Image (tube, rainbow, N blue to C red):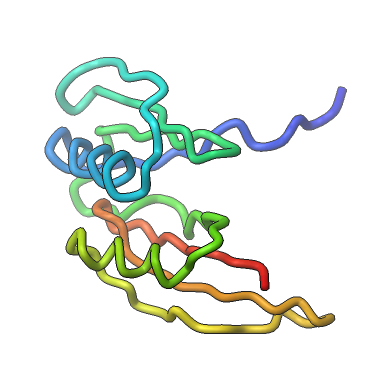
Length: 127
């Protein structure tokens, strides 16, 4: 028996309205295809394809909670373009875009933004 990698990451939105905002953002701004959707109202869920894993979005998050994970890091070949796209969609880019070096000559370019459920998203480019 062995681990086969990450199947999905789960994000809890604060009810049906924010759930739809999250789906719209990931589908329309980040181009993540919808894989499946189930339930209704505050008891609905969906899975989106992030490229190499799935994002499960649930509508049953507490009203006072923010997105319930530290961040999702998306691999991209255009950090600056993704940051502009997110800003154009009305979301906040709160770090970068900027170049960094993670040591051992591992140069990267990154930007962090806030998604519609308060979740943090990173755009990550190896240089």
